[in-house]
Amino acid sequence: MSETPEKSPDVFSAEERAAMKERAAEVRKAARRGGKTVREDGEADVQAKIAELDGLDRELAARVHTVILESVPTLTPRLWYGMPAYARKGKTICFFQPAKKFKTRYSTLGFNDPASLDDGQMWPVAYAITELTPEVEARIGELVRRAAG
Image 1 (cartoon, rainbow, N blue to C red):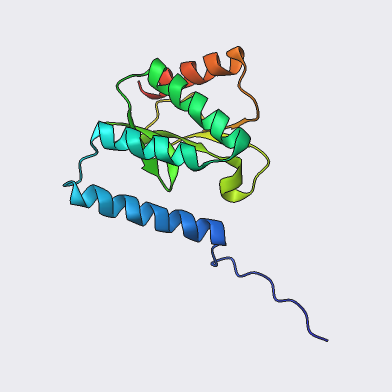
Image 2: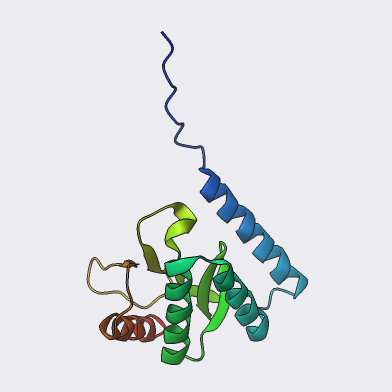
């Protein structure tokens, strides 16, 4: 009797491999620019990525993009692993992960290590988003302002 072998823990999913390929392309593009992210290029890249999304992912990504840049206009839009992201001094502090990217049931607003969200010994670094209400938008703005320092 043949059993289905378990997935090896060191094997990446198709979605993970695609994200890594997107990141490699982003790094190559930045290298052609001398490692500098030009704000206009980043904005165009993010807008193009948002336009590729479907339905609710597109609506959420577009509004989150606007809320983030209205909250902290000095952040630089960029792509990070194929996702809309926002950087301060060249370091990605937050990103929007569409639900469809990794086949999850909700989109995510995530924060990276450079984000100034520290709160004691433990704090959240990712937030599920299923709908944008005025309260949710206000919370996003507050988190991004705090994360940007």
